[in-house]
Image (tube, rainbow, N blue to C red; front, side):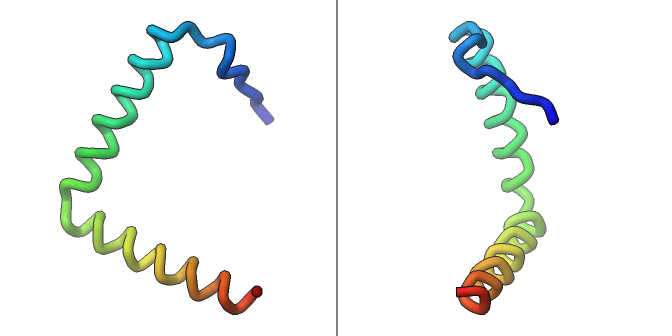
Length: 53
C-alpha cells in the first residue's frame, strides 16, 4: 500500500495536480455516455446501500 503525505506536497504542485485532474474529469463527463454510465453506477450503489442497511 502506498501512503501519500499530502501535507508534504508543495502548494504549487498540488494546484497543478488538481488542475490536471479536473481537466480530465471535465473531458470524461463531457461525453453523455460516460454521464449515463456514472448515473447507472450511482443507482446500483444506492440500491446496494439500501439492501445492506
